[in-house]
Image 1 (cartoon, rainbow, N blue to C red):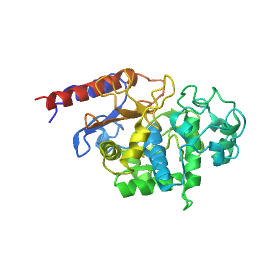
Image 2 (cartoon, rainbow, N blue to C red):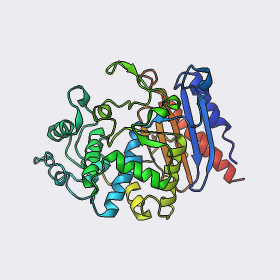
Image 3 (tube, one colour):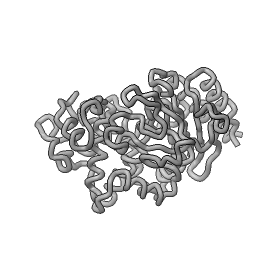
Length: 356
């Protein structure tokens, strides 16, 4: 078994230095969990002062890969959707000479021309208002000339996936069925109140006037009812690890949540200049949050609340790190230094063990 002492110490020091109040990590292979570890506290209550290993976190933008990207793969395999379909095929409001050739693939690859984020929650609620606002805003750049990571594109993807389902299921309903079928465990939109005592708090939100616990942190997702293509999922490190094992196994040639060739196509970096993006996923580069010890084939994603998932098929390894770095305020960005150091420690420990 690898010695993860250094990785554990990095997390403990991060708690002591105020990088985040709580964290749960899980490391594994396609076949098994190698290590899980919890540090910090999610509450001042004595009974749960120590972070439980089954703590639930607001996964934020991990939603993009766990839910939206995985459901897009399923829809494509079922023939409900194709990557080269124009967005206007599904959303009539998306029209104009500047965007008429933008496709589903462009939304997944963050090359649609859409800007990164806008605070639509201040003036809009519900799908129709968000959809119209996004579709009629000026594009920031010409599609496919560069990549700009965009929540807005994934909000549209969430709408489209709801429309493609022949059974008329909402995005959250589709995902919950998939999660249950794949036995991923506690992973869902709009978590039940029974989970709240094990849920890490996120931010004291001045807009909503309360501390958020078990309520989606992302304000645009909140204005969409807690279910969106870019954010909204809650889950444990164990459940994210179960998802990661499915992706890892698929990248190694096994059929899991999708065919191996489908998962491989989504994990392949696009040809857009200076972009590290694949379809839904980010890929390994020297400035990635996963550090420098993963292979060039690694894929991953981060979440604004302090979450991340990285998967390295060549090393047969996945690394889940869930934290609530936004508690009590999103202004704390010190996790940017911790993530690479933690991942390097994990991967170095695994490499050391395998060369013995």
